[in-house]
Amino acid sequence: ILNVEQSPQSLHVQEGDSTNFTCSFPSSNFYALHWYRWETAKSPEALFVMTLNGDEKKKGRISATLNTKEGYSYLYIKGSQPEDSATYLCAFENQAGTALIFGKGTTLSVSS
Amino acid sequence: DVKVTQSSRYLVKRTGEKVFLECVQDMDHENMFWYRQDPGLGLRLIYFSYDVKMKEKGDIPEGYSVSREKKERFSLILESASTNQTSMYLCASSGSSTGNTIYFGEGSWLTVV
Image 1 (tube, helix red, strand yellow):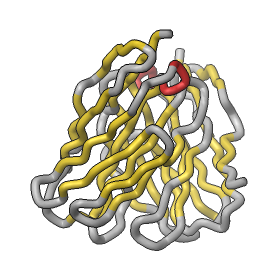
Image 2 (cartoon, rainbow over the protein chains, first blue to last red):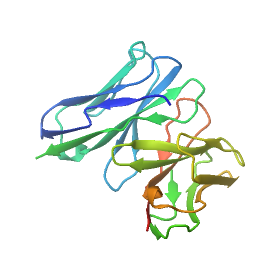
Image 3 (cartoon, helix red, strand yellow):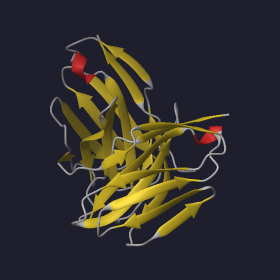
């Protein structure tokens, strides 16, 4: 079973803080790295799908980078808001395109 | 808006019962998936399907089976429910190409007593 690791498991920040978390994944047989946000009582929602080494993607205050050679991706949130509170999941997709393998997630809590 | 619908949000079943969890997607997606979510274990893949009548085992298929008779519908079956199958079950779907976003349902909370 492939290992996708996320750290930290959880963190708590104050409104306005910027934060980042890490996803590490196998560097071989890589096709894509997916990021999802999962708010309580809702469906996980796609943030980014990243395929190219060095790729950077941005959506509002959230951005992500990708290093496929060393097998990691960072997710950044600038100026955290209480509505950013959620679990952030990353998922590895291999070149065969078989089902995504998810990390255990990072749970972010933002206090106002 | 894309939609993955899980028909039952909350279920309570007795040990030994046969349980059906139904999932329907309206996006004409080829791929459909069943995951379960448990605290500290993350999302784990139970089964997936690339086409009608086709199924593949995921990481934790024991105690489960699936059915995909129509493209839009993917059912998860617990042949004889056990207490260790108490969990939250998530259905998802995606298009057939690599790099596609997958879309999730809202989850089904199953308690086996």
